[in-house]
Length: 340
Figure 1 (cartoon, rainbow, N blue to C red):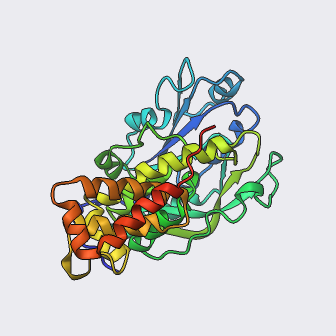
Figure 2 (figure 1 turned 135 degrees about the vertical axis):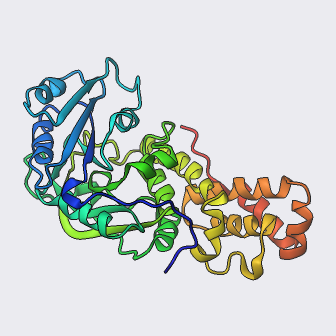
Figure 3 (figure 1 turned 90 degrees about the vertical axis):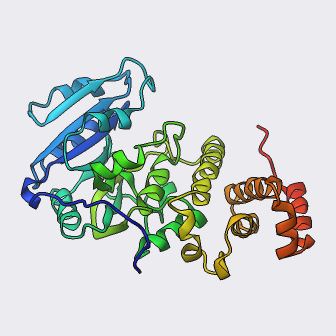
């Protein structure tokens, strides 16, 4: 499917001449960071720089990184955790045409970067390239994934399908498997520093509006699973933050450059060239009827905004009938708001 999007020329040098900036945000990973760093420096595509931003670790993480002797490695030590946004800081220092993200406890196969560089070089329409993921435990041996079992299994074949999946199911792409163009990251503004749980999903949504998201069908990324230390490990706090953050990400669907794509993402929405409050009301109704808490909350907020805009109430009642307005208020009375 060809997307109706404009994109500047994004030519790259020959693959071997293309420089990759690897951004590693590191925190409290003294047991694993050496393996993570070594897997980057051992890449068969050796035209790279590794920018490690230690986010105020209280353990030996920065000392271990500093122990590597390689001119391609740059270590930035932050004096306190979260005093800066580590990945955005790393991006500001990047000089490569391409950017890859690595976690300080994950591991790459030696051919990872070379295969991704080739896909971005040969297909300018590709905005980001990912790999399949295997899970490993603290001993670096294969793991069933524990709480992450079943993650990162998406089989979508174009960005329209990915945008639908992101809306309906949230994130399904692993950040430590990702590579994209630095120019695209600068164009979309990098990571949203207000997000902590699903900031990567926010990035994928914006990149999908620029071009295609593709996956190398090999497990070239090993993600370490540790229920005690993974930021995404399940808890009520993680769910609360994720839901609130997802609401703000879904709101991107109401604005350019994604808004014009809504009829492709959601067949039936925008039929007959309907725009304005009718288009937004259709998206809100879809979200309100969704099974996900975040989607329903987003739908509630969008429907409220649409009703309140000048002429919105009358137009919605005219097109959909008053029943949908009754449904909206009934839905509000049934919403569960987490208070603790």
